[in-house]
Image (cartoon, rainbow, N blue to C red):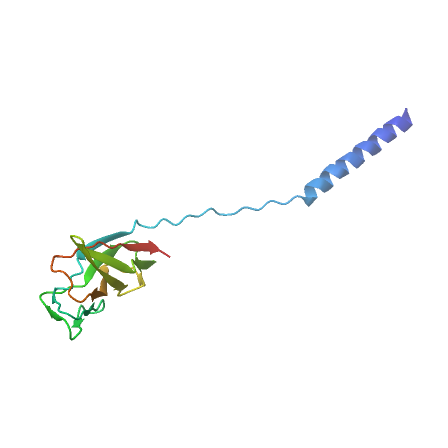
Length: 163
């Protein structure tokens, strides 16, 4: 009986040591969970792109409207007049965040069955939002020789998104 008791005691001691050594090899750590919430971006058109009035003859040309300052230059074969404006957009979002601005590369202006294409360029490819943020879009309108008279209109998109 003494041997059985000794054996059970020794067995219990080995089992207890095994349980203790397993606990000694375990470790626990914790981590934080985080999220950053940004304001929804809004982009609002404040003015349309307007190349003004163009008179064309037997030779076509280009009308270039600067996205930086709204100035216009007209090829010698064309006569340009009237009010011109770069398209303008206001942007809102979380202050201090950077947004990327993408402008359609071109727009097709149509009047009835006639059309012209303008290549587009934005004043900014990105902005760091600080409140009161805006950008403009200008472009170069290709006017064909003897372009048909009419009021030409087209739509283009701008996209603003957080980096």
